[in-house]
Length: 91
Image (cartoon, rainbow, N blue to C red; front, side, top):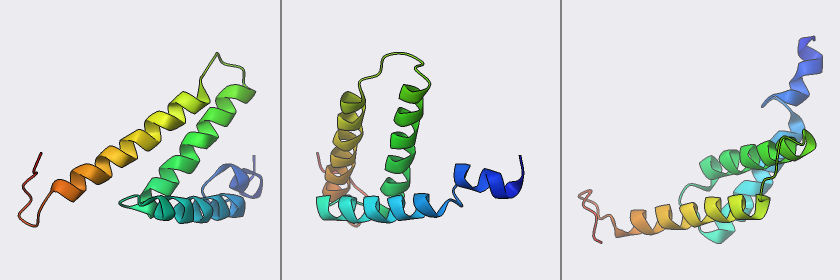
C-alpha cells in the first residue's frame, strides 16, 4: 500500500481533522477540562466502535461505552475542580 493510499487510514486524513475539530467544539461546550485532548480520544473511540461493528467481532454496547467515556470526563473535570493551586485535592 502506498503512502497516498494509506493517508486516509492515519491521523493525516483531512476528514479526521474535521471530526476532531467538531469533537473539540462539542466537548468545550460540555465543559471538558481539556477538550482538544479529549476530542482525539473521542474520535479514536468512535473509530474503534465503528470498526468493531463493521468487522462483526462480537457484541458491543456502543451507548454504554460512550456513557462510560463521558462519565469519566465528568469525574476528571470534577476532580480537577477540587484541586487547588497547591496541588491538594479536596474530596
